[in-house]
Length: 316
Image (cartoon, rainbow, N blue to C red; front, top):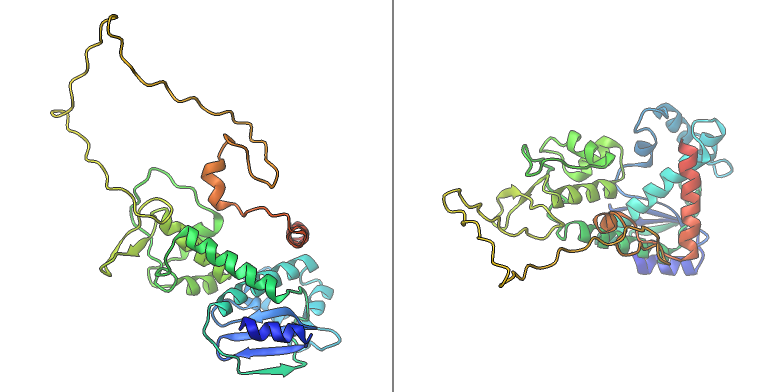
């Protein structure tokens, strides 16, 4: 798919690329403006997930969309949602569909010149940037849980977890509440009105935290070890009171014991280094490193973050 998109981008074409049954990619002047796939929730599902935006208004905007006034402009003009909400939903939908399209083995069925998505262009993505984002997401999934067996299996929470307390994100909580031991991550994403990739990442992190039942090597379901996806060491059997070692008698002053010095706690300055990395000893830096996106100095990323900030401000 990427090679075909690169050729279309070089020709600065406008139209729709059909990828068998995997989905469709829309381009405007050689840049991707929308992508859709049956493997992810539709944009309409994302817009109407919390019932704040009426589904009837979205359907009417789609039916009345024209090239001069696309559906996105109608939704914003009628006050159904703000410009920031629309751009944020389109951003989530396109990146979601692009990730699953990039991993499919579909062949392009044909290109329809001049075809446009009913929303109209809201974001412009270059093909190389989309490819880098798909690779970043794939690596993020592998860091969370380095195996794809959970991606298509039903999500089965454990009835009893081997921990006193757990800390969950709001999406992880939604996944656990909605999981019925039958629905797969893709089905849960449609049910919750959430991007499929976000649900997939939440499922892998829940498995790495030992909160989900995962298949063992022999195909039987088993509990996931606590950690970051690597097998946990075998637990040591605690010694019984009868076999506990006797307390050591203190040594005389002539033969002092060579007890190791207690480790010193590093200073918790928390001041960031250049590039966004915290200094050594920053509070929580090691525990939260895998949950935070890596900071970059790419101007394109900076502009993207600024637009995301504006979109999030519009949501409040």
